Length: 285
Image (cartoon, rainbow, N blue to C red):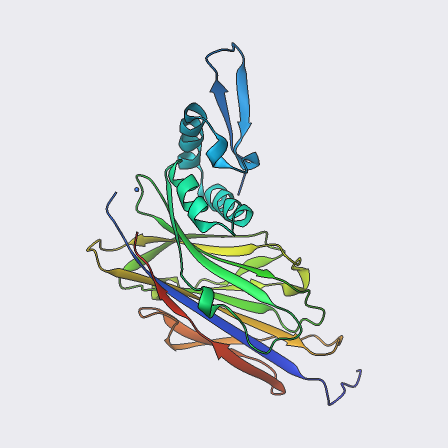
């Protein structure tokens, strides 16, 4: 067994984010739709996933795309929405306006003042929570999106991502993630307690690319009151490269990031260190 130098330092970074939203009574795969134009006899094929700017579509194409979007399964819908957000992340109002044209309603957490991560020299991360809903449906797609601005050259154990919701007011329906080589479900046993946990394989993460984990929720009651959801990201890394194999353990207990969810802690090697950063935000549809 190789000896490990005593000066190797292990750090664990935890970033939490939560938001509130209000339910209003109203509503990644590849989707192709076909548009029969007025001036042509042939049918034009439209690859929905190739659409980079909904604002450029005419009314006829908008209607056809809208029908296709509403027929997407969970993975297709989540993949399309997260890709469109990624393309226009610098203009959230445009995202909201564009998606509304195809029957998708979306809101973002007002969390810009809370997303900075302090004292991290090895890498930087940006994150965002978005909530989407399709017209005619009461299912809510809560997506936690994140990207690294620097490459993690010394990854520790797998990173941990937790999504939280108020299980007294919201029920679990489904989930979706980026490719499983980047983000994969770790534990679903507490879905009835408002908590879902994922592994993030940070050694595979590409710089500047957004990744996501999404939970699909259904309101148990629609009474005009606030619905709260949240997320917590735990990052582990070493300050020097090492070949040792690290692993972490999750223990459940107490309250999660939001009320109505169960909390968890990540237990790591005794020589590791940790700190937390939390945020709390609210919005209405």
